[in-house]
Image (cartoon, rainbow, N blue to C red; front, top):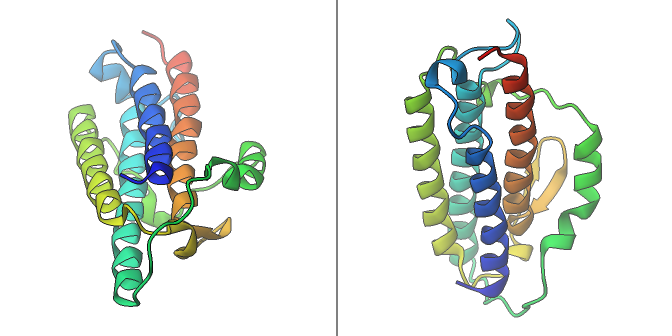
Length: 179
C-alpha cells in the first residue's frame, strides 16, 4: 500500500480500535438502551457508523473506477496528508450535526447485528482502499454535503474523525444509562 494511503488507513483503523474499546465489557442489554427517547443507543450509533462507512466505501470504489477509466496517473508524493483535513477538524469540533435520513440508524437494532454490520462495512472499505492504492487520491474529489469538496484522502480522514466523535457520544451515552 502506498505510504500516504497507509498513513491514512492507520489513522482510520486506530479510531475504530478506540471506538470498540469504549464499550468493551458492557452488557449487550445496556448497549441497546437509549439514554433518552430522542437519543441513539450504542447499537444505533454503530448502525449509523456502518451506513456512513459503507457509503464512503462505495464512493471510493466509484470515484477510483472513474479515475482509472480517465487514465489517472500514479501517486508521486509521499508527504503526509493528515494536515490537509485540519481546517475541517476545527469546524467539526464545534458543530452539532444532524445526520441525513440516509444514515439514520434502524431503531432497536441488536448489538450483535450492529457489530456484524460494522465489520462488514470495514471489509468493504478495506477492499475499496486496496483498489485505490498507488493512485493520487488527492486529485480525486467528491462533495461532502456539509464540508464541501473533499479529496479521497480527506474522506478517509473524515471517516476516522467521525468515528472519534461518535466514540465520545458512546461514552456520554453509557454514563447516562444505569448499569
